[in-house]
Image 1 (tube, rainbow, N blue to C red):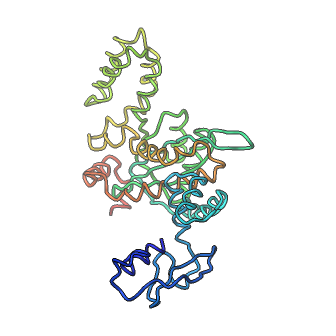
Image 2: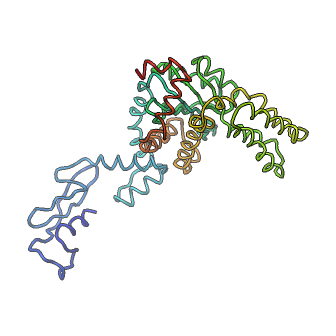
Image 3: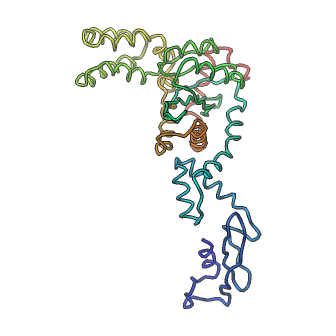
Length: 363
């Protein structure tokens, strides 16, 4: 790279005297001692100033930034070590790469403990699972995540917590941490169908409306269906959750049971048993319904995490997993600059539905 910079500086390549249009020329090399020895090309005039490693510079911290950047894109420590060798001719170990990425741990701690806003109109919560080594065995760990929509209609990841397999008890710990970081109220929580999740939320935020994700429920009920009936059943089921009102939705659910009840009563009972949480969105206008009826915002975030972490089938420890998820989250959320479309109207309606609960924040 330094030789390439010298070519550009002089205007001709090494030994290409035919295209030389300057009295200046190469003049050997000078020695620069850094964390490694580097031969820096020189010119006779002494006017060559490399950009990669400037004169008198003995620190290549930008290399650390490059390593952290590659780690953020999902490369393994071994792949990064190979890439650095190819790019810079430096032999570094995967352990050194891991040590360099450890420098972001204080940043993660600051991010995970930062103060949050007092009220979030909408919050999405879900967990994604990864394989992690523990005591010479490979176990499944859940990465709990919460995405909040603030009063400006902008999304943000409020935190990531690594725990055992997803449980309502651990969600209770997450919710209490959110409260300790300043979240006093959540208007609507969009969640998956984990048993006890609703009770965990109500224990910390008793006035929060719970919307159980429709897509998760469709997936759950589809497990009880024969493949040959899957398309027809789900077409009839769609008439339930796309109905204009809850009354019409219940009428369609009755029709669904009349038609399919003999074969798939278990699938239909799941909708009956969880109806109170599934039907929350019917009380709201379309603008709010399409935001809360599913955890799509969380699903999209999880897909992007999977894309970044897919090269790492097993993480060596919880810390390595958290580093990857944090760096990926920083990249993902940098693109979350726009408010939800039509947010001003949505917020106006929420302030009516939840009368008094936004007054201290809006006025």
